[in-house]
Image (cartoon, rainbow, N blue to C red; front, side, top):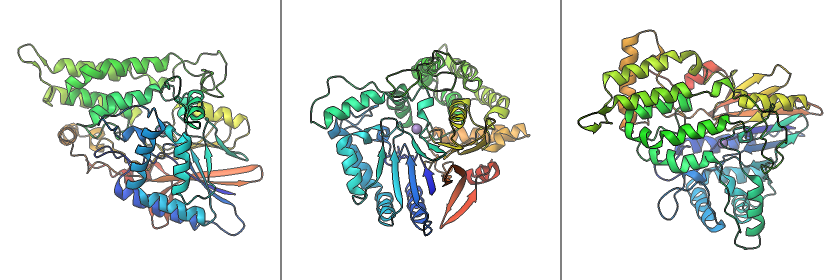
Length: 457
Ligand SMILES: [Mn+2]
């Protein structure tokens, strides 16, 4: 059996909120058609889309604002219809794929949980031609022999979904009953709807730039002190809540209501790579720097002082942030549970969610793969980390002026990746590859990642 896995397509989005571009969707449709042609005689072929297929958080409510969750089927269906209409090429390609007898599995992530609602599952199935697709919800993972596939948000305390609550909603909706309790939305989605999206109205880079915290937070504070003053506390509190230990020693969530979570009481120390307190301290410092006794808050100047502090901070973190796109470096958040799965016999463990494509041979045996994303990515120009300090400063200045004016198009790029796994009896082998269009594929490499990101000084 040959299995192709992609994830984090983030299809849809209101004006200015689209993460997967029009060009990106065409490439995605081209990829799906390419998968359709990979079905060799006698080999069962399947495409698994492992979550964050569409993005409900990027769709506006009728009132014009954003919410972390669509509380009724009607609202969610309205958003899904808008998404389907604006991304038709992808669904047409999936229809062709299924007609060509390639299997299709759809799984939930954390930006598309409303897809679990009965009316939305029916709508989606009809849109893909009514073929018998497999739809996994209730936090079920996909497995085939020694292959395990899941979105990955189960191990990210910020984005763990209350699937028990979601199941209760589905039960009510299927009878057209009004649910008794409101659904408790994961904090990560609240953060997107209430904080990130408000910032995104003005600064489109916020959810595209990597590394997420170390890059975005200090830049925001420098660009707009008022924004950090307003939202900084929320962001810091959310980050601290993460540390309070939501997962056990295998990195598995402890809360029972998150279906199939363990009940282990072993508290995990926060993984060292998640301690972002130095980043928050810098952001606070940058905001103080924008305060002027006489005129109050002057937020809109990228002065020399701020530029120097930012540059110093980025260069100090060069080692750490420079590994963001290194394909063999992954956070313990995902490696711990992947390692635990390997001990249960899974030779290949595939996740998505982080938007960073990875391929790691695990110490305990087994391979961890991350499918990356089909949404756009952005990163700092590499000159910022380069040896010449005055050039670095000049490059950072141009970059900040551009993103402040929301001129981000030249920094956005799509680096489409997919996992390909062969399952033969008890043996599974897998790899991540770049998809460059027209059937051109290339093995994932850090070098290839950098060149496709097109990082220019
Ligand atoms: Mn996700």
